Structures are given as C-alpha cells and as structure tokens.
Amino acid sequence: MNTAIVWFRRDLRLADNPALLAALDAAASIIPAYIHSRDPQRAWSPGSAGRWWLHHSLTALDASLRNMGSSLVIREGDELDTLRQLIVETGAKRVFWNRLYEPDDMIRDTAIKQTLRDAGLSVRTFNSSLLYEPWEVQRGGSEPYRVFTPFWKAVQALGLNRPPEPAPAALSRLPAGIRSLPLAALELLPRIPWDTGFYAHWRPGERAALERLEDFTRTALSAYKGARDLPAEPGTSRLSPYLHFGEISPRQIVNRLLNDAGVISGPGLECFIRELGWREFAYHLLFHFPHTAQQPLDDRFLRLPWRTVYAKELRLWQRGQTGFPIIDAGMRELWHTGWMHNRVRMIVASLLTKNLLIPWQEGAAWFWDTLVDADLASNSLGWQWTAGCGADAAPYFRIFNPVLQGERFDPAGGYVRRWVPELARLPARTIHQPWLATESSLTDYGVRLGIDYPHPIVDLKTSRERALAAFGSIKTHAPKE
Image (tube, rainbow, N blue to C red; front, side, top):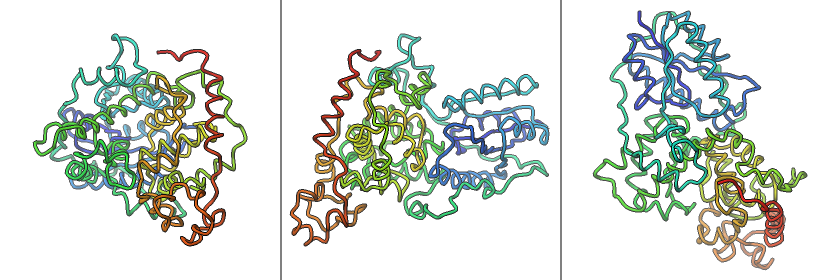
C-alpha cells in the first residue's frame, strides 16, 4: 500500500495543515505520528506550563483524527530512530512534516531529512506557522531586517491575505498492529497539581482556537487598539498559545479578519494584524540571528555590568512579592493561569532587568517554564526589547515605572484587586503605591505593610539612575543597523 507518515510537532490541527494535505495527495494510507523526546541535552524543551498545554492539545488532535477514522500514533525516543522504526513497521515510502525554526530544531530536522533521503525515502517539508518564511523577507533581497517597521512594510508588500486550506473530509484507517503509547506515558502533566487554575482559563485544541478567534472578533476586536493595554479588561485575543502549538495558523486568522463581512475594519483590526507581524518579526530575527535565544542582538550588552548576586530578589519577583502591586499581580496571574497580560509582561520585565539589573535571561527562563504560550522567538524578542538589547533604535532609557504604569493602565485597581487580594480594600488612589498611605489608614483597610504585603524591594528613583548609568557605560558605539 502507498503509505506516508505525517510527523506532527507544533502543528496540532487538521485545517490549513500543508504537510497533512500534501500527504493525502501523495498516498492512500496516512500515519499521523507524534514523537516525544526526553533528551536532557535538548535545549528549549517545553517548560512545565507548555507540557500541560501539549498534553491537552494532543488529546484534542487525537479526538479529531478519530472522528475522521484515524488516530494519532504516539511514540517516545530519538526522533530519527523512531521514524526509522515506524517506516519499517508501516512500509512508508514518504515522510511529511511542517517546519520548525528554532536553531536546534533546524539542525536536527536537516540531518533527519538528509538521512531519510539517503535511505531512499521521499521527504517533504512545509511552512504551516508563518505568513512567510524567514528567508522570503529580506532587505534589498539579501539582508535580514533588524528593525520592525521596514520589515512589516516588506511583509505587507508581499501580501497578507493568503487563503488557508480546509481540513480534509476523511482520513484512512491505521493499518492493523500499529503500536501507540498511551498519552499518559509521556508524563506531560504535573505530579503535584499546581495546574488547577489552568482549567478555568484554557481549553486547548483546534476547535477551541477557532472559537477563541470568533469570540475575540465579535466582542473585542473593534476596541482592541485601546483595550489591549488594560489588564483588568478582556481586551486581548489570548490566541498566543494556540498559535504556538499550531492549533490555528496566522493565515486562518488574517483570512478570517480580512474577508468576513461582519468584521469591522479600523484601528483595532490594523493594530491586531500588526501584532501578528511582531510574531513574524520574532521568527525572522531568531532564524537570521540564532544566538539571540541566549545572547543579545546588540552585542554592546555583552559588556553591561549586570548584577551577579541576586537570588533573593529574583525569587521575590517570581513569587509576586516585590511590593509593587502591578508587578505582583502580573506574576501571580502567571503562576495561577499560565499567562500574563502583554502590557504587564513589559512592566515586570522592566523591573527585573532595569531596576534590579538582573540579566534578562533569568526572566526569559522563568517565562519559558511558566507560560502556556512560551515561544522561543517571541519570548526572546520580548525580553530583549524590554531589556534594551534587542531590535530597538534607542532602547536604553526606556524604564517603565510600575506605579505610573499601574495608575495609567489599571486606574481603578481592578487587576491588582483580583490577583493581590490582600490589597483589595485599598482605594484606587493608593492601591498602586500603598507605602505612601499612613499606617492608620492601611490598618483601616486591613493591610499591615511588611506583614500582609511587602515593602518595595528596590527604590525606583535610585535604581533607575543606576540602570541609566549602567547603560550609559556601554553606549559608546551605536548598534549595527
């Protein structure tokens, strides 16, 4: 029988899945496979929150495959060895997959592709996760972009509205005797149930992704440009984990927004599609500058005098005990839900990297482990942007004041009250800087500073001056354009 293996990775959907659709055109029998590796040497394996999402996304994918008459073959081990074994078991002559762009994944995939081709297999790979491949958008046709605005103009010139492909109508049944591990054998879910809060906020899977897009389009898109900065309001799409795991594609999102007559055009639509552009830009940078997963794009920052002793402050930041309410609200939202509002991500990252002068890699590592949408390209871009060492023209003086940010974007204090309940009774005028209230007034609201809620761990004015001095010491030479 003409058989093909479709190797699923972070493309956990049936619609607009080019590898799956190409396999259906080429073969009568399709083997949908997922291979889990526990290689301790593998960089950037999914963090704890990512593994939670992966478990439930694989569950949803398997259910979708079963509805079409097939099922997901789950294996564990070295990817090349496992593919070879599956090829022997099934007699497959073709292997299809959708590309990944992280540096280690690209090296591995290139080696696997060549080895299988040398063995006589047909191997085809596709783009399922980006509007354009990172090498398709080049400055002057040969140089990568380092600044977002010209990059985005180049993408727009190529065209945004690329129609997605529908899901197949049916799939072939698996051949008899094909072994598959139970999903629980991968041990993706935590043994200690710290993930309890996730279930109230998330439903992974392709169907849930499409429903999330529809809900956002109906209820929040028109006001997105302003509402996206307000963490107390449901003003963002929350599509990022679905995009990361490939439960929905950017083509599907853009096509839905640009072609549906019920979608209101305007600044909200333009702003949201531009945010998809930032995701594209993140992958563009990671592909062309793979060192940026761990080192700064602006190499002057290799000389920045980061602190070297900071374990106590880092731990307080991770636990949401910094004494700055908007910071602590964000860090607690992250811990309880696996997600943090994007405006707050910038604020908490600024405090860590600038006021505390803790290396941005520490924050990126914490986000990697605790975010359900942890994405190496976007995580690296975001942390370097806030730390000032990434793709930004004049970054060193941007230091977010958490008090002013809280007062501007959470003026009534609703976000803080939700995630820092010990401050819930404070009035809006003091909720973002409780240390300025008198002890008697705090007591009236049930707050004992230093007991119920901590004092700030750093002086904002002094630490800002220290950060500016540190950045000033390395800005002798301008970064490369």
